[in-house]
Image 1 (cartoon, rainbow, N blue to C red):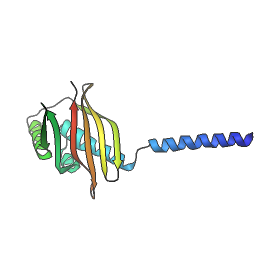
Image 2: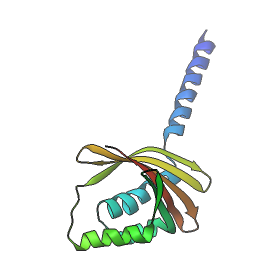
Image 3: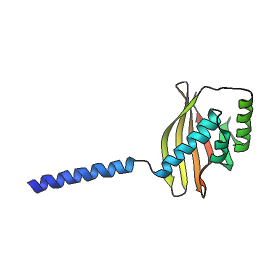
Image 4: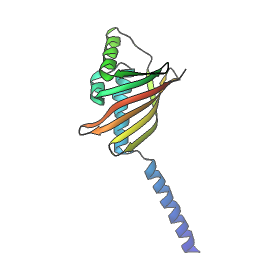
Length: 148
């Protein structure tokens, strides 16, 4: 009887440790989240440090949108230029925060699903794709859904 209780207890402990090990984020996941926070959320959305934005986005990045059934494209250089213009005009948008919903990493490729919120309202669900280059993770594309 004692061996049986010990065996069941040991199995339960192993189950708990294996599930908590899976739940903990990896170093790559933390690096990706930090990159998105500084380069995308703080930099572009909140008109922050655009040098961090330039460092976090691949130069060939493109934002793809769907407007009136037509696919639109916005290269990162144009997005940064627009952000620089708004900063120069002294615009101060409401603070944007993000909630990470999913980070999926396979080797050197990753996809992140997140929500952007302003003034307590969900405004976008974004899908960002990233590749890991020799100098680290870079955001290479984005599609999104705008919430009404």
